[in-house]
Length: 582
Image 1 (cartoon, rainbow, N blue to C red):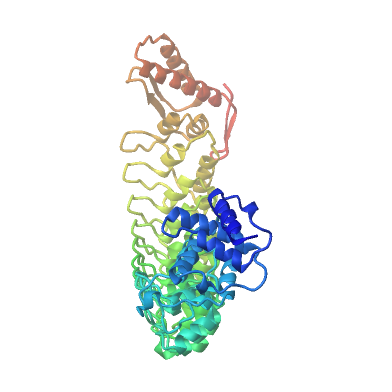
Image 2: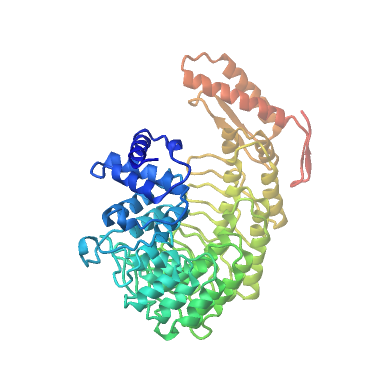
């Protein structure tokens, strides 16, 4: 095909975007024709040319061209950057594109002959795309194109070609930069990261060895206060730890450097469950008592994880002579023991207690470790038994009647959870079952305030107290004058009322603005008679007040259920008598 015909054809292809019209084979003369028709001054024309070029080199055959004979340096760099920006839509893969450019022998030269190192290149653009999308890699071929290692180009943010090579793990490229005298501690101004930060963060073992052997400073902190040790310990595994500590001069390490949040490397090592890193830091003298801005020490961190006993043992054994502060409090007053018990971690709790943890230490809300145990939903009594047993063996007294900032005892917390096993065990340890809270209520009020109509917990409560020969005041009144029976009635818990009556409770209600009342009654027959009288009064009431009418219907419903419950034969196991059906 004549050159003029080729120009016409390529002009048609570029303008139409119909790339199927391209000749099946590619050649240097065709590429020259394609460049000649390109109007580089207009952006739209450049983009159309770029799209055609990508299709063109996809099926290149024969010797590769010498690009600088066809394109200017600025044009080649524009093509490189454009490919990086838009390669999601490219028909040719990044490897193939940059491989083609590298195969042509093209080498970058300072634009305009300037020797300034401040310049944004395709290498920087590729790195930015990688930072935002880790599925993209930074093509190694770029460093074959930008191979002037004496000119470590840096963009406006301070990101250099050396940094990008460290992110990518191109150790041979990094070695060349260092051979040309580039600084192994060069800081990326945007983040404060050094090449060592980047090599560690991206897990490049050979680079870590290389940088440390060439003078990289492991104590340089970035803008977040993170040193190389922090970055090492922030990894999810210990794969780099041995390499790092084998290469670095241990005596030069600042093992207790703190980041902007007060975290030492040991905090991160424990948080990421890095056994080797934790052990190495402790051997180098890391302080296990350091607390971050949240007040959390490494002990808090490990106790916030379930079943990390090995790490806990390492921390507790770290200083036999200099005792670890096991009762250190975080910002909200919690000790490591509080955190371990909150996870129902019995083994960790036992280790802490044996290391001297105070079993009665209150947190910022006044909650003791015993409150924490009793607050765990669905908890059986194993952890509570273990807690008491360990303290008994250590001859420590546990205050089972301690009150938190709301005046609640551990028993009250267990009652709120409806945990009969915990309640029985607490009562057996001398807990006051008749304690009076700030609002005048008793544990019995709380039991009667549960939703549902199950009397199992109330029966267990009476049973436990009977075993201990304790008298429960069934008619105790809170600050509002309510008895446990009043509370049970408000909840519609007819079974509980029947059981309270069996235990000798006096029942009296005034529910609708004082106009309807069940007078005091102590036996099921007398209570049933009062219910029948009240039900009759309710039926005869004529009210236009919708709120009162709804209240009346609610009371009627509760009275019906209560009467049915009272008419059932009930064995009072606690008092040994049988309530006969009426």
